[in-house]
Length: 113
Figure 1 (cartoon, helix red, strand yellow):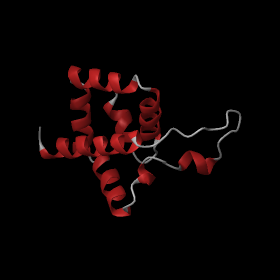
Figure 2 (cartoon, helix red, strand yellow; figure 1 turned 90 degrees about the vertical axis):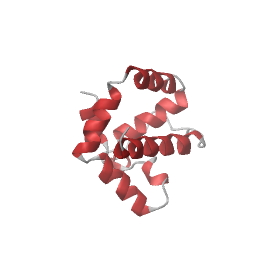
Figure 3 (spheres, helix red, strand yellow; figure 1 turned 180 degrees about the vertical axis):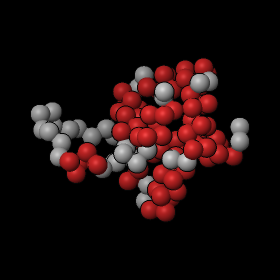
Figure 4 (tube, helix red, strand yellow; figure 1 turned 135 degrees about the horizontal axis):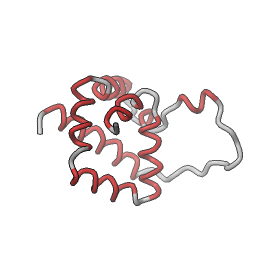
């Protein structure tokens, strides 16, 4: 595994570990979200260091990172691990928040093609 793949994996693990320590927020069921709420990323915003946020977003949007994510997602063992992670409802919600983040979404969409 090259350095970029390790960094990406470390970043995803950090996000997941951070998310594991948080309780899922109870959201009112019938309230539509405002445009501002849809643009916010509660997961990345939990990272206190703004420089680290910028670095993670920049790395996730590099072409090499996209290629690495595509390669990683084609690995059957990693796919099974992700399925196991997504079996937990709290983790599923966390991953959904990550992939919906407008700063990361293009990379995730390309990796899942």
